[in-house]
Image (cartoon, rainbow, N blue to C red):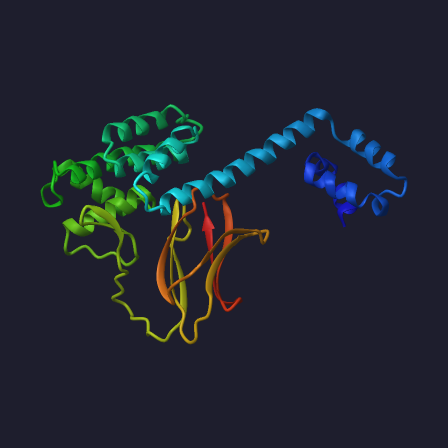
Length: 306
């Protein structure tokens, strides 16, 4: 099989792991021996291509371990975890990490640092080539000052200036993004007549918490198993709501991409819960979310990453 892959795509030999597989199976794939293997690699792949492939591979590996380290800091309950997280993110240059750094700084009450980080994001964006990123930055630039003002007590939710109120309503109505989610959370506190039918972050007791879904159209029975994913399609995050009825033994959840590769896996401690998952680092495409009970898949759903 590997040899057929090499015939169809000789450049796959750029990867050291593929080269190792070829070497270990050289007698079956290349009866001519190691000389034939060496000649094949030399004729197919240049030193530059090998170097490029290695850079790409190790960049991917670095991103994987960076995400694991960030998750560790986010779940760590020690006092210095937030400082470690901001130090880690400060060394990253991509916009996703800068947004994460901004929210970490807000959590540390380093509001000047958060504003500086938000301003730095604009230097990485070409408005003509990246209109979606520019829109995202503009929306975040609208909602972050409102959030900071509420956090610092300079403006109460019930007594916000009119231009802040207009910005909250506009973002809440027109944008299914993180900025729109924060705006909707604030709006729910301001307007008691406003109804939102999906779980979101809600501003309460000086922290951001998950809101309970408001469902006026129907009520799910307690013995009904379900799996729901919102928003869908999604850009930055999804909220996985689930309920598993019957005997529960070793619940877990996994997400796989269109190629069947597992990109996320976690053990579940509750038979019914809501899980918030950031997907801003996921590649665009279709994903399958599956809940397992005792190692067997029992519920699954699809979502799209824009």
